[in-house]
Amino acid sequence: MLLAKWILFLLLGKIIIHVWMQFHLPKALKKIEWFEKLHTCDLCSGVWVFSILSFFMEVDLLETTGFGYIPIVGAIVTGIVVSWLVHIFTLGWKAKYEVIII
Image 1: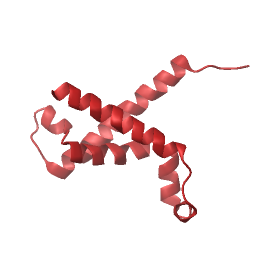
Image 2: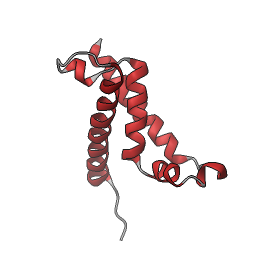
Image 3: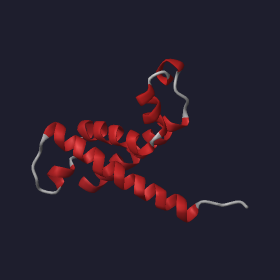
Image 4: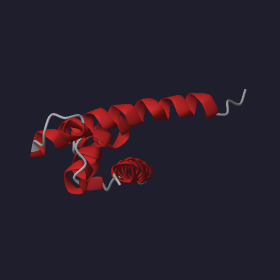
């Protein structure tokens, strides 16, 4: 059950990040500089998306590794670590299977 929860967590987060980056921001949000940067950076968006998902899905990396459950801190740490790992995996996937046209 725990593995299925983690797989669902990873897939749902990656899908949310992908959909988030596909659509254009409304003009009101484009005026906010940090929001525009957040929208164009999948690693930055991933930290927020995975942290929020971690909190609501009760998936906690600290608890899984034996440090105990720390509500907000655990969700943020989980978001940071998982976002980085998914980002590295995505870069490797693109490098391996990307078609280069010369």
